[in-house]
Image 1 (cartoon, helix red, strand yellow):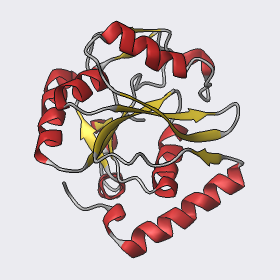
Image 2 (spheres, one colour; image 1 turned 45 degrees about the horizontal axis):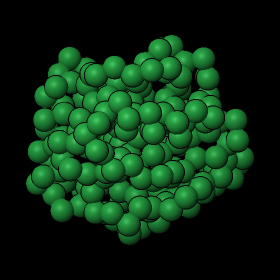
Image 3 (spheres, helix red, strand yellow; image 1 turned 120 degrees about the vertical axis):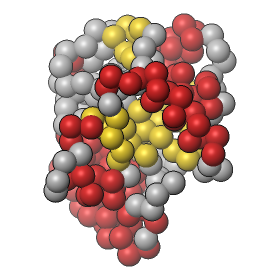
Image 4 (tube, helix red, strand yellow; image 1 turned 180 degrees about the vertical axis):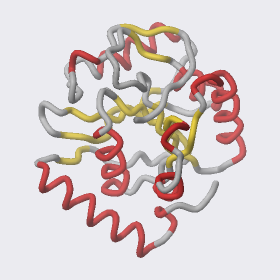
Length: 204
């Protein structure tokens, strides 16, 4: 895995202080703790706004998590590309979702420690379903899914329960969706209502 700001003491210390300031000024609070697991997939949900990326990055610094964050390839242009990679983001081509799942599983298999952030509904448009690529990545890599969230109604973001994938997708997804039932995104009408078997999406 490439080095990011999370690998430099001065950089991550400065960014954590900045993240705490952003949360305090904007009235947000962080909840939960970093999972004591070497490898896992974090769901970043609900995803309805570009602001989700900002708060997700802030939470990563506040909770001490070094994430790899899926983002649309279109954002990786000069001068943003180096900065986004420095923060831990990596570009994803929407047209290659199945390849993304395979490459993600391979990356998990090649590293002893790895945290991947995958928004299940990676679009700012209204969606009526969740993409389930995160589920296939977690199942294929044999890692759990950690339920990360941003609740704009309460202005609380953080880490929820850990779900160990059983292979019974409908039951697992019911458990996961149940946790998010009362959590509201910035634009609640854009939250997904059901799920389909498909590839992963990405921020923002």
